Structures are given as structure tokens and as C-alpha cells.
Length: 136
Image (cartoon, rainbow, N blue to C red; front, top):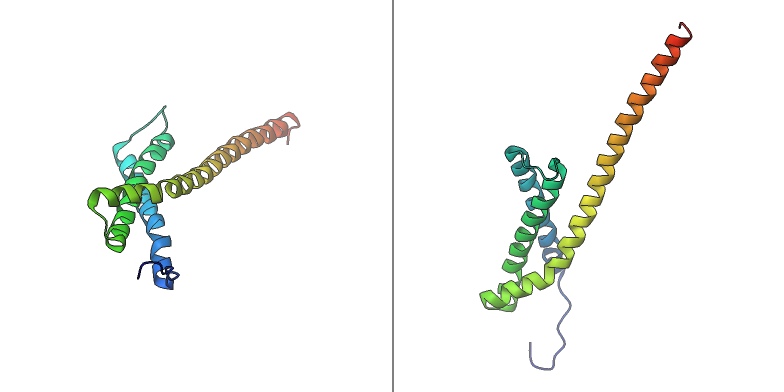
């Protein structure tokens, strides 16, 4: 591209690569960390869920930055240090947003399943007690 020219819009392939590399790093980090947390039995505050959140974020961030780094450096012909800075700058907020969304959904499912189990246990206990009181 000559000086003064406006850059051309990205092609479909460039847009697809740009949009999917961060998500791929996050998902891969999440999958790997879930198995690692389970295999190690790691817990935070007595719960594997909190350990899972921590290690999934660390793994997703590292892999997301790595995927971004290997996309940015060749495309912009940056030095390794400049490429790392650009990758961190480009992906940190999107990784945080992705992880917050995933954790939010995990908490909703976790808490709703706890609610269902507690409610079902209490309800069935009440029904049994009620049936015994009325000699049913």
C-alpha cells in the first residue's frame, strides 16, 4: 500500500481469521483447564467451581494472546516484543468479556441446579410427611 492510500477493507477470510482466533484460544484454554482442575482436585474456598474459574481464565488468556500473537506478528511484520504488546492490547478485553459471559452462564446453571435439587428434596419431603399425616 502506498503512503496516503486508505487501507482496503478486510477480505472475508481475513475477517473470519480475526474473529475466530480469540474464541478458539479461549475455548481451548477452558477445555484444557477443566480437565486439569478435575484431575488435580484443585479447590478454592472449598469449591472446584472457583478453581475452575481461575485456571480457565489463566489458560484462556494465555492461549488467546498466543493465537492473537501468531496472527498479528506476520500480518503487521512486528518485532516479538511489539507483537506481544499488540496481542495483549488487542485481545485482553475480548477475552475478559468472553470469560465473564461464560462464568455468568456457569453460575446461573450451577445455582439453578442447586435450587432445583433443594426445592425437589424439600417438596418431596413435604409430600411424604403430608401423606403420612393423612394415612394415605
